[in-house]
Length: 420
Image: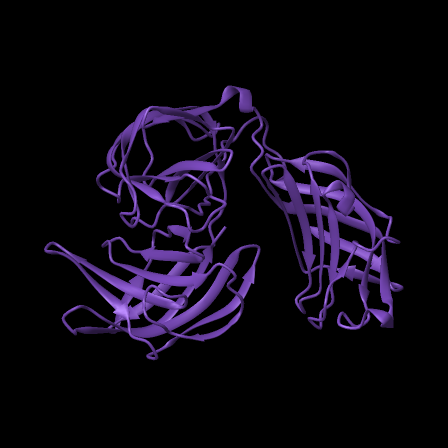
């Protein structure tokens, strides 16, 4: 459960009935298309993501063909896709050959206009055009370049994930770490069936917490099944220290699930995940008028443990040391942990020794304590069937062994997890 340092939370809430009753609004339908080579590219999936001041809009087809637009900024407006303005536009053919990019000197067209940036309904719309080129043979420049001209590009109501807050001046997240004040400059919050997650960044520092059953009241940080705080002094460095709460309390003083706001305070002790640094004392931690969003989760994990059914209900994710560590926990506090490399891609991978990439472990919790079974190399495999929009889908099976030589057989494992 300590691997709840970085979370991926989404959920749904029933909206209140207001005003006059009438016809149910039509659902928003996403689309992404553009013309090139005398044909129209029509995406099967699309997305828009804003993170730390940069936005990426992507349209992909089931055959792997993809158009990606990246630019500096967010919200309604006109943005350059040119590298000279920290923008880019690329086209990936469906045959997995090398990219077309807009980095050549003669490619001077590249612009996107955002016409809708709806943080309430979490959708974005806009238009775009660009020229992208590539060398005919990337190893032989003399063969020249080939070019694609994209026109009439349009995307409508594509799903939007954004760290932009609607009223940042009303929100406040701050805490003293060993007496040094950290104030959140970018604050994000989400609520789902797994609980409430709030994250705040200041420069490269990132601190956040998750409360698994949020309500007005106090939560003991020494019990990681109630709540946990995580702190990363430099989230851009996978080799840096990573801290989690070992004692203390979080208190929710107000919670409005209809308006999506929460306030409270917290304090306690942060311990380095692998014991590589001194403890950090948290004092005077407050979060005020934090606005959270609700989404529908796609996370799940099922398996058979020695033939007995395992169904996960909590899905913490942490990225550290160049790996992604996903823990699937059930209501009995048993858990399965899988390890992936940061650059995980589709394929079939033989199981390795924990905690190497493509390894796993099983934690059996009883009244007498925990027994940890680590994966036995060569006894199974992890299969990644798809990864799209940071949703990792796959299956697994392997044998695992504890320190006394006892083994468990994990079979028919399947999962879907948001690793963002």
